[in-house]
Image (tube, rainbow, N blue to C red; front, side):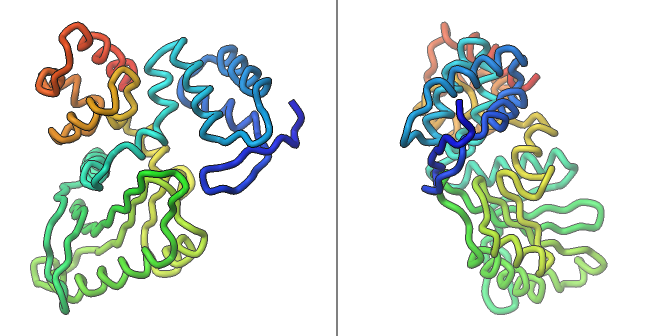
Length: 278
């Protein structure tokens, strides 16, 4: 495979195919080195003009499933985050679970009064003198990103909330933080504004070593939408029950029965969930 092979990203941008990046993502998902290298060779051999990164992902995912479903499940994290819809509520619950794993007390969907108007706060967290005011921006397609208008708008809301209910005596001495979470990416301008204004912007792979991908790796809190043994319809039925994490199925396997999943399939689903969470 020549190094100048071009592929098309979800954004429409064309980039040179980087086999080492594919190898890293496969190894990160838990694939053995020999298997990962074999998949890279097979994908490389099948590359053709006009191929997209999504097609490459599907090829690699299909090959991984032949080895171990839970490895394929880990590899599918980026796609799984896109499936936390169609509403943004499951993504808010997912973010709340990640924050709770960091020791925060979290509420979601709270209406809070600013100095000028009231605002719905997607995620409100407290811990160790910190108060986190978070907004979740969910996208159902990889090519969609959050531009600079997002942190600009959210920062203005944060200032209004800081001058409103957060100015009450009960919050005296606390450190207030403005956070924005997205399951895709921020533009460079958005990230620059976030850094300049003291906001925390969390995307798929930003900031370095603390994006959603790293956060899931660190906590082991994989969304149930990673599971390859569930259909999209079944995932949505579980999300409707406010089940968001794969490990919640291990804790409450009866949720699978409520979702109408045949008893003969439950064992396989739980086995994949156990391998994924392990």
